[in-house]
Image 1 (tube, rainbow, N blue to C red):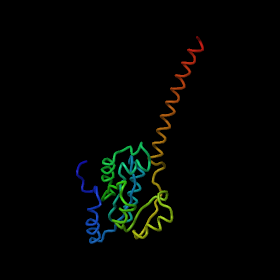
Image 2: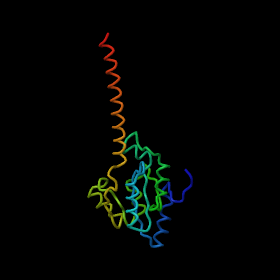
Image 3: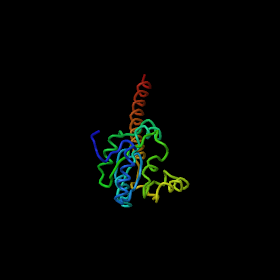
Length: 182
C-alpha cells in the first residue's frame, strides 16, 4: 500500500493526533465497520456522519477480524484496498485499522469521540448506554442503502447457484434420456 497520511495502521500515533485536534477545538466523530465492497450506502453513511463534527475518523476492520465475524469467504476486498478506498472519500479525514486481537472498544476508548455513529443492528440499547461512558454523544444511524454488502453477495451466490442447478438439471436429463433409449 502506498503511504497515505490519512491511514493509521496502529493506535500508538492516535493519542498525539487526538490531542492536537482537541487543542484546535475540533469536534471529533468516529464510526467503524467492515466497509467491504464500498457502495453508495457507505458513502452516504459517512457523509452523514461527517455532518456531526469537524473531523471524521473511520475504523476499518482487518481481514482477520471480518473473517472471524463473517466467515471464510469474507472480506471480498482486502484490507489495504478497503483502507485506501475509504480514505479517498471526501467526508473522511482519517482511517484506522482495527485488528482482531484489539481489546473491546479500544478505538472508541482511545479517541473518546465527541460523537460516535453506530448502526442499530450492531449495538443493543444496553451497549449504547455503556458506550456513552467514552463518548459525549452516540448517534444511531439507519442504513443508507436498500441492501448491504452481505445481502448483495448472497444475491449473487443464489443467482450463480440457480445457473448451476439449471445446467446440472439439463445435463442429468440428457444422460437419463440416453439411458432410456438403450
